[in-house]
Structures are given as structure tokens and as C-alpha cells.
Image (cartoon, rainbow, N blue to C red; front, side, top):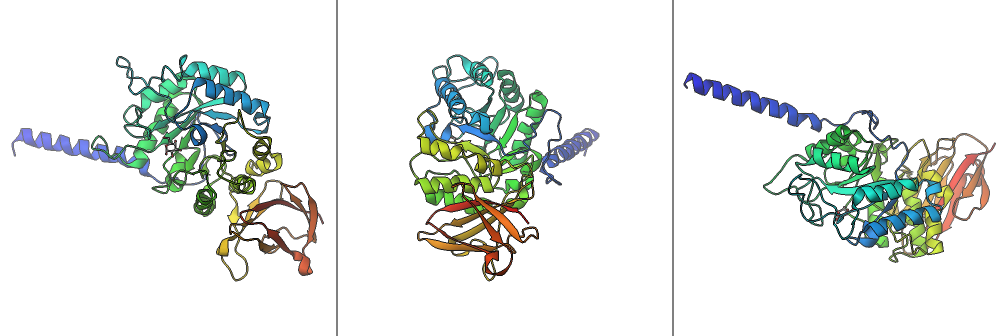
Length: 416
Ligand code: GLA
């Protein structure tokens, strides 16, 4: 080899080694509890709440829809309960970037006054604005993606006054880029940090590469499954997958089993209450996914149940743990008992009958690991009924007939 070739080979080795070091950095698994370790990060100490356009409206988004939905959150009393983020999902963009600046362009028909104008409207009502992008070359619906444009896009969102970014996972496998999945999400995390505005980072990777392992250091929530559909079967499948992940959620970082379908017509009122109950028990983000401008009073009442919302938002941030009973594993035969420890020492308990026939769901104060006491107050957070259960003799058992697809939810407190 000539000296010149030596130098070239050496330089190449150094560059490759440096590239490896850089590439290796974001792959380190998160250690310790999820936390906001950058001054401008959103803390998300309780699960995010709000509304998202996708489940009900798909690509039919507009400034008018977003603003009217913000108004509805206020008039339905949902803002007072903590619903805060108004999120525009996919399809808000034009199909090209600005030729001169390279910036994303809001669809001029759907958002004629731009996104900053919508942000001002939403902020004026005490709410926050969320937007959608994708860690690929195109979004799932085919609009320009952020891959390779992270810095500019994060700056653009910050300038527009965006407070929440849902960051999706379509269209990254082409020859254009096969960058590692963590690197793609870390690039946007870094870009958001650099943009200097607190923007909640909602990672939407569908659970493909176990994001509950690596996403806690990057985002405040991570989707754990593929998309929900408006049916009991879909909701149940997602519950079953997400329920197994309680160890990975906590203040600052939440498992996200996808947005709520309550009000969209595909589930019975019982199943809708079940979705809300299970999501609250799992400390899931509560993102209403329906047309809040036309929601029925009974569906609005589900979203607005203050006691269920309080369980979701409990500051201890525990995701409910499925309880095994003597002789059977948690959830066996479609009968579930879930236990969520709450900050005030009380415990939220769900008795869920996932089957198609009425069944008795049983547990006991021992299985629920309740503090030693001789009597417990039981509050049904859906009916408002109060009762008691003793810790001794047969009364130490909690056995309730639960309707098909129903989830009962109690708050249990030691009284003496
Ligand atoms: C993916 C996401 C959905 C939604 C659509 C939009 O499927 O998982 O939640 O954002 O893309 O195209």
C-alpha cells in the first residue's frame, strides 16, 4: 500500500469507528425509572389526556374540526377533568415540502390560516395542541415524513406553538433509509430537545420492537400494539397485550394501548364503559377518539366519570397488575382481576368478565394484598354504590356476578 492509501485507509477506519460510536449511543437501553432528563422536556407525571382526530375522522381533518373539538372539550366539562391535548393526527399536510425552505406545509384547504393560528385558538381556551409526524420518508397516509428532516421539523413545530408530537413508524424500510428504529426516534427526541419548547413526545411504534424497553428514555408514552378498531374484539386483544406490561409504566413514561373508541358506535354501552375502565386501570393515556361535537350524553358521561379519571390519573402512576387466583393464572378463562395501587393507600380493583356469558368473578382481600384491616369500604365507581367487605371468614372474599364483556371497578379503602 502506498503511504497515500495508508492515510486513506486510516481515515476510513477512524470515520467508521466514529460512526459506530455515534450509532451505538441511542441504542443503550433505558435504565432506572422514566424521567425528564432535559430541561425543556414535558414531565407527563400522569398519563396524557385529550382528544385525537384519527379514530373518528381519519384524513378528514381541518382547522374547523380541531377548533370545534377544543370548544367541545371545554363545554362538556372535560378540560376541567384534565383532558388537555387536542391532537391533529395524519393528513394535515400538503403532499410536498416548501421548495425554498424545505419546511412542512399545512394543507391550504384544511388549514387555510396555518397551524400556528390553530395553536393560538387552542391555547386561548387553556388547551394544548398536538400534531402528527412520522419517523420515515412518508407518513402512514403518504404525506412527507420527518426522517432526515428532524431538526427543521421540530423547530417548525416549536415555532407554530405545538405542545405534543405523535411520531409514527411508517415507510422507513425502503432503500432510502434502513436506520435503526431507536436511532430514528432518538433523532427526533434530540431535535425536540434542541427546539427549546416543551413538546410531549408520543412514540407510535406499535410495539414492534418492544418500545417499553427502549422508549422510556426518549418519550413520555409509547404505543404497545397495532391500531385499535371500533370493536370489542379489537379492544380486548389490545387490553390483553398491554395488561402484561405493567412493570414498564410509571410517572414520566406510559404504555399507550391506543386511543379510545367510546362514542363511535362499534361497541355496546357496557363495552364502552369496559374500555374506559380497563384503560384507566392500566394508567393509559386517555385520548377521546370520537366526534365530541355530537357525542351522546351517555357517551360523554363515560369520558367524564371523575372517579374513573382519578384512578387513571393517580399520582403514584402504577399500571394495574393482573392478579392470579388460587389455582389459576391471571385472566384464565377470560375472567380478570386487576389491582392498581393508589397514592392514598387505597386500591382500585377491576373485575372483568371478558367472556360472552355472565360469570362470577372472585378474589379475596389476601389476593388483593390489602393492608391488614378488619374491614374495607368498597366503592363502585360506576354506580356510586358503597359497601363493605370484611377480612375474616367468608366475607374476606369478593365474589361478584359480572355481565358478559363488563368490567366492574371498585375503589377499596381500609376502614378499621
Ligand atoms: C398509524 C397509527 C395510527 C394513525 C395512522 C395515521 O396507523 O398507528 O394511530 O396515526 O397511522 O395514518
